[in-house]
Image 1 (tube, rainbow over the protein chains, first blue to last red):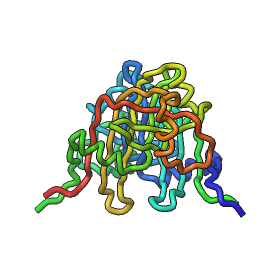
Image 2 (image 1 turned 135 degrees about the vertical axis):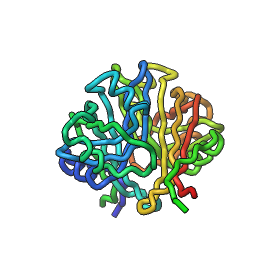
Image 3 (image 1 turned 90 degrees about the vertical axis):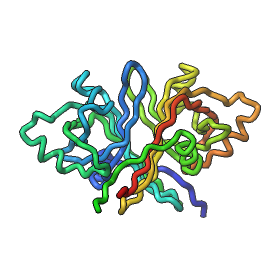
Length: 138
Length: 138
């Protein structure tokens, strides 16, 4: 019997389920033709990935400059010793929803791990969701 | 006495030290004007971030199409309960070094967590390295 570290593809709904339980990930976007990547805390609300940031952050500036900014969002949890776990990739568009009537409520759902002033709520609308689970297959 | 979750900025050399001990991260790059992000295993060799991938992967295709491809690379280790840890961001350029005399040796230094055929060694040359450590300050 051979054990292989074969990645198992996740259905989009299952992948979004992992994201709901994860508390953070990384957003990638393009500024002046160059790739930028930033770690962020998130919450999943009504199928959208909600992040809470400062209006002067690189991500906030990019979203203000281009509403509907194309983004990729990635999150994973891989165990340190076994290297088993999951990874989820989302592509979509990011929009400033700070003026939304529910913005304050949405922002509070994002548990930030850094004590910094946050004043801008951004929602990432997923267009494509893919994911892999890493486990032993026989 | 107040405890704050204040991020501490890391010196580039310290940040690269964290990357050396980490075994994986995520690379972001631009394809057709859109941001792409992929998780990868890496090794740090002579100050460069070396990854080993399949020639048909999205990252490999982008590097073949544009040697010296601008990339961002991110890695972190955040503890699940305390949320303490570190995050490192690298910007730089990615080049196919599969034809390098030491390519096979470099590739073997990257411990892959997925059993897939790997045949392309890519080196990311860092231009800027920044990092944060998340801990309690008094």
